[in-house]
Length: 141
Ligand SMILES: [Zn+2]
Ligand SMILES: [Zn+2]
Image (tube, rainbow, N blue to C red):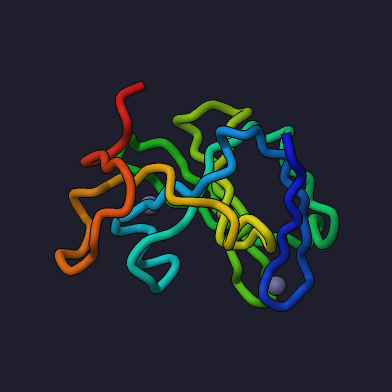
């Protein structure tokens, strides 16, 4: 288990994530929502217990945006209200204690982590190369 510091673009929000060895990797998500929310072709994520994330600065000011996924259940996105960096997402379908952390915002993790898997590969843009084991949507649970 190692500790990773994260911060948003403007510095108003900071956090700390404790990640097990097998969580120290990027899960690339190619879904259309990630494209729209990030303005890029995919996002870098990891699925962790909510208790592994501690917001150390700006927690009381975090913005929240909710949309409804394919399951019909809510997905809550938590972001810095000043610069709009997304810290983490909570998908109700995963239960109350699991969150999706944006690994691209971990100062050390962004460079050190390798691609661990790709999800929603069906929405990967045709010119993007495969860099890790790809699932059409989500891995079978
Ligand atoms: Zn910010
Ligand atoms: Zn996505």
